[in-house]
Amino acid sequence: MLILGIETSCDETAASVIEDGYKIKSNIISSQFDVHEKYGGIVPELACRKHIENIDIVISAALNESQVSLKDIDLIAVTHGPGLIGSLLVGLSTAKGMAYALNKPLVGINHIEGHIYANFLEEPKTPLPSIALVVSGGHTELYVIKKHCEYKLIGRTRDDAAGEAFDKVAKMLKLGFPGGPIIENLARKGNPNHIEFPRALMSKDSFDFSFSGLKTAVSYYIKKNKNFVLEDVAASFQEALIDVLVTKTIKASIKEGIKDIILAGGVASNNLLRKEMLKKAMEKELRIHIPKPLLCTDNAAMVACAGYYRFKDKDFDKDSFFDFLDLDAVANLRLV
Ligand code: KG4
Ligand code: ZN
Image (cartoon, rainbow, N blue to C red):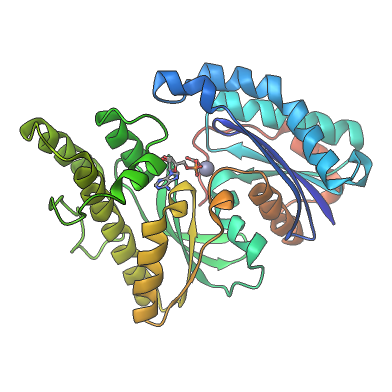
């Protein structure tokens, strides 16, 4: 079964063809980094315009690389939220137009579900139920995946997302955008124990997160210590944030009695997070599943993979796909 995935929820124009839910035949990602870099963050209007310019080129490239033609495609899967509304609309309108013209079924995918399914591209046999930690630029959430396409939310951030905290701290330190990879690189040369930054909600039973206090603590620290060592600030900030993510995820897994943990989203490409999570999980005899970094950040293969499981789940009636022509883009779409 061949699935075309389309992803335009933020600043990446992406298209992918996958076969049977796990074989990646192509995974094209066109980054808009050059467009947004000089503004220090994503400008929604520019992101939308750039998607319009790129979408056809990216889809053609995905089909060419996989050496399949449109008529061979069995299903079109497209992200319809959450994300920037103008950006989402470009991918969704394109997918709808193709589904209508080609008489193919269409399935709308939640971007968060896409991130989770990046794992099933590489490890289709990951046992369920599993715990999923989703850490991206807009989301920090802990779920129990009860079975395919069925989730229970057990914790979420009360303010900033983990990726957002990386991006805001990088901006504060005038390091550029996106902040995660820049801070991770600097932190390699710093002392993670140099500054004891706060770990909010750490001792609480709740699985909620809060990162705005950590961000404010970094801001106070650099104002008070004019000669601060950049690498030490980066390393200490990263250590505090990752400490909270790892501790809460392991606690959740033990409390729920679930031994498999999936990491998802852009922040899951962070090497310290991957290493610490593996280390702590090993101590507790838990199993960690993390996609390779390229599949953690935004891509369309993960969307196509989620589409495969939605299709198998018969979440939508494949004979009445025209219903999906009224599928809407939803900026704050929730997974549960
Ligand atoms: O999942 P993603 O590509 O897009 C969203 O859905 O938001 O995640 C982007 C976020 C950004 O905030 C970026 O700074 C962060 O992921 N990120 C990282 C790393 N690579 C990307 N954060 C920490 N360490 C990294 N290596
Ligand atoms: Zn994402």
